[in-house]
Length: 336
Image (cartoon, rainbow, N blue to C red; front, top):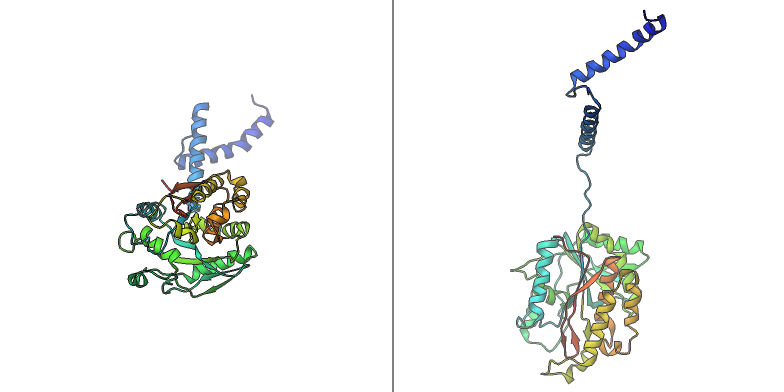
């Protein structure tokens, strides 16, 4: 016969056991009858708990890949008319990659043709602006070129905030697109064949030749990539207008056009941990001032590399022609 203490334990525990069994019978679970069924019970419960957690968070935050960064060698104001030039289909292909695969929310562009102050940046914060025909001596139709575009005061304000956070002085104003933007973009993002159809904000360079300052400028706006905003620098990897007189009618490259462009490629494609140092060293090469008597067309490469942070850079294509080089670069990954 059970002892009085055992009977007391039974009477204490029995209501608890009955309550548990009743709960399980009312639920969709069946009480496990073996160790294996207990394991299955645990799996089901874990699954149910996970589902409940997902229900409590109806809009889970998904981690998106950062938008890639680009550098365009944009050529002269004639690039949009010279469909036979080898760079034309290259820019078209890169433009389609951006519109069809990256599908950006907006584009921010840094052009070699807008330098503000040595230690201060300007950017366009207007919605509607005209084009700036910042060239001379070309056929009349070049000065009638059109490129439909819309700015974004909201994006401009965000950029100003990022620059302020990085300790970079900056100011917004109304300014049109120069040919460093609209000529190359007319090829890459043709208004009829491959329209951009997203806000476009142009930001200036510093009016100096400091590669590290421009690298830091790129880093300052890198967070835009988290919102799928594409950053593009436009210039030329070799740009010597002065020496054009020696190459009229002869597309064979001058020696520095090859040597400097190749050295730049090696620096840009270096490990991102040492890329800034390697790229800065490029500006001290013996052929640097031949390749760029003034380095305005080179600095946008540094902005693009800075915006890439720790992601690798890759030369997509290049061409050496007279006193110019036409390298195109991409930093980061393109969505599959």
